[in-house]
Image 1 (tube, helix red, strand yellow):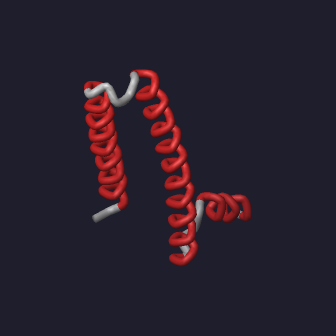
Image 2 (cartoon, one colour):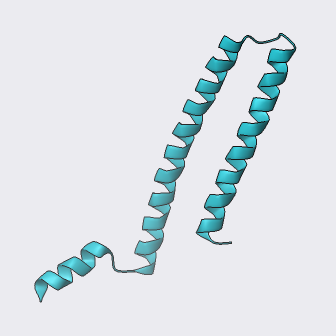
Length: 87
């Protein structure tokens, strides 16, 4: 499984979770256990948390990729630019 597959898996999981949450929240509204205002607040909080988790995951992924590239001693764009300037 490649990096692209992992990203798609994460996105798919997030969409599935969103659908399940919406389904459960709508059931609570139908049963009168939550008002529409409460639902809006819950959804907004869930979106904020999801965005924060996405940001953290992206930062961690970048860090991991950078570490792997350093371990493999692969030249970066900056490395190549430095070499070109020396010539």
